[in-house]
Amino acid sequence: MMDTLFLSRLQFAVTIGFHFIFPPISIGLAWMLVWFEGRAWLGKDQDYEKIARLFAKLLAITFVIGVATGIVMEFQFGTNWSEYSRFVGDIFGAPLAAEAVFAFFLESSFMGLYLFGRNKISRGAHWFSCLMVALGATISAFWILVANSWMQTPAGFEVVNGRAELTSFAEAVFNDSMWIRFFHTLTACLVCGAFFVTGISAWLVRKNRESKLFRKALVSALVIGFINSVLVAVPFGHHHAQQVAKTQPEKLAAMEGLESTQENAPLLVFGLVNQAERKYFAKVGIPGGLSWLAFGDTKATVQGLDAFPDDEEPPLALTFYSFHLMVVLGGFFIFMTAAGLGMLILKWLWRNKVLDNLYLWGLTLCLPLPVLATQLGWMAAEVGRQPWIVYRVLKTRDAFSPTVPAEHVLFSLIMFSAIYLFLLILYIYLLRQETIKAGKATIAADN
Image (cartoon, rainbow, N blue to C red):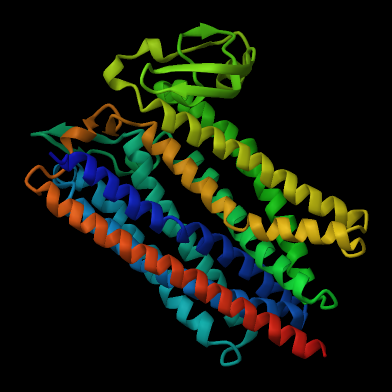
């Protein structure tokens, strides 16, 4: 017999996972375009205008698909998660409405002006429209993260007649995890945008080594990518881990493979999970590392999984592996951008053809990895919160729509998966076609 709860969770994971490919790219790429358009306007460097023309088209493609997939995600609250909607509607509706009114309208309105206003409005007004697109996308992320953070660390409410009712809008918005989650996510989006630009620019540089146009884009993106790759980890990732240690200790224990409460808790650099026995093995750790990471003291006591009831432990394997793969990728992004900047400083990048080819190929292949890292971070955060949909207030098993037949959920899951696969293929095809067109135009201009 099919399980409606499992299928509802799987469908939401598929729809939000696919949707979440696009907002990080849109936000990061929009801020990259603010930089490129600013250099073209204030620096009077027409190369940056040519660069911006290409990436503005790619932003438009990304934005359109992101909007379409986001609408589906929000409808599911009313269809598959009616008990959740009934319980949190008084609170959850406010940030979603604010996101639409204050962010989406701002972003979409100025997107049209930015895309179609080039050479029709002043350069300053055109740059301002680009800035408003980036700001609108960022404000949108803010309100979505307010809603998600409230589910992680709920505040400013009371339960009345089986429903959560708002008692303090400020406390609900500025809950314990909101700000650090916002800055950690925003810098991760900037890494996505930077690697999107480096990946495409590296491919175009390989096609036309004599052109300096996309070398400029590559250098700018490497600098921005390096700065934000560091910021994602320190201070924002570090402070986010400290927040989780204080407010969601079982999530931290699952992410770090800490089975028993202890002082001088080790920080695992490697480990494997036996989900059936709920055990970690082959562990390699740094003594005291987790205690220091969580509380700034190597002798601090960190709660392990033994401190919590078995039915309140999150799924260990998915939480552990998603978190550690995210951390590994974060370190890799720092390495790749630092290596590129080092090669530039040493003047190796454009002179050693073998080294060039290896590095530029590496950057091209790295293009989707920051998006994967954001997906893994989302998985660690959301799966690590289980079995709660609203942490220690409402369990996931009590939040789905019990009257919706499992067969209906399965049908819609298959339908959405097929549509999303088509959209993903179309998205990659359109990106490739626009990039090839830009490459041919650059070669023709140089000749």
